[in-house]
Amino acid sequence: GHYMRHMSDNLKPLHICFIAGTLGQGGAERQLYYILSALRGIGYQLSLITLTQNEFWEKPISDLGVKIHHTAKGSGSISKLRQIVGLVADIKPDIIQSQHFYTNLYAALSGKWINKPAFGALRCGLYDEIAETGRILGPLSFRIPRYIISNSLEAIERSLSSGKRKDRVFYLPNVVDTLKFQPLEEKPSADRIRIISIGRLFPQKRFDRLIEYVSEAAKGHVQGIELTIVGNGPLKNDLLELARIHAADNFTIKFMDAHPSPELLYQSADIYVLTSDFEGTPNVVLEAMSSGLPILATAVGNLPNIITNGNNGYIFPLEDKSGFIAQLFHLLESKNLRDEIGHNARKYILDHNSGNTVERKLPEIYKQVLAQK
Image 1 (cartoon, one colour):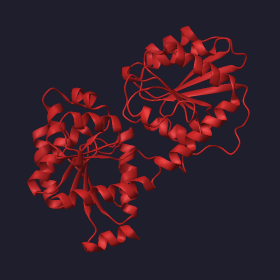
Image 2 (cartoon, one colour; image 1 turned 180 degrees about the vertical axis):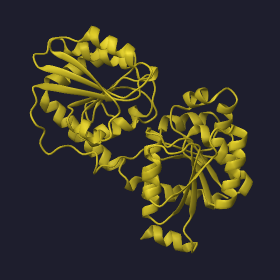
Image 3 (cartoon, one colour; image 1 turned 30 degrees about the vertical axis):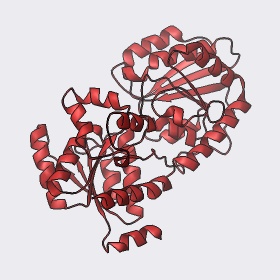
Image 4 (cartoon, helix red, strand yellow; image 1 turned 180 degrees about the horizontal axis):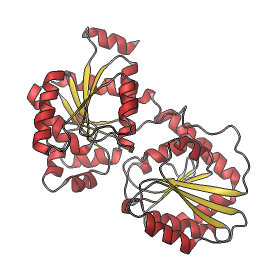
């Protein structure tokens, strides 16, 4: 009721216009869906401008009752900026919010145009985002937005040390649908231990390292071990070749395309392993934790703020190969340990990353910013 009260102070609900680069099947897009869904639930008016058309999340978002506007196909960035500024001027939102780092400039400049506050997004490590966006546009996409919302405490620290003011940078943790991603009551007993890892087959994700580590840890195990890698990408053939080299009597590697119901994949697995070189806050880890899986991961991005070693998972510095493999061996040995860590992982997500986190946090952020104006 407290939100509705906050709404009726101003008599009309706040209108937030989001800008997204894509509505494809990625983590940022899934978070956008959760955010829109939570804000819709507490009575906000919502619009969305997207640079792409007919992608995965478009229908679910439009089913929430969010009005979606597109920029024209194939237009360059200056033309896109004109279109977006025009759309924003017609929509007349109270706040503009970018969901991808590379759409920050569109949000910031259209906010300046209609004199409303605009939020940029910062999802990965700050320096990675800047480098990926380009030598000129990268730094501008960080500097120009007056306000930033980030899902990573690490990125917030870096923003502050790069000159952003503390009252203009906000933390919004990623959320997970904890009803959809939940453990099975009773796992069917299997003749093998199943390890899973989900992600695009790109260099950053280091699936080569995953295959090597799991194959090392599998040595000396009586029980069969099955590693499933879920995702598509340019490294598929290299990884298939690597898998062929590392396969053993007790160790099989399966590849699957991205799955329409990832919750089923987590439910049938025993351990989730992530070996990336860098990340923001990987959704896959939060989903796996919500599904009651123990996590074993490289200490990248926001993971050190989420995972407490030996409690809800294990993280290792990139260079600690032997520690990583030894811990994986240990997890493979002990079902009790897997169950206990997985149980704690689920509890952590319920406390920190469930849908009501957005409902609590975002209205507070909006209120602070509107009061600053």
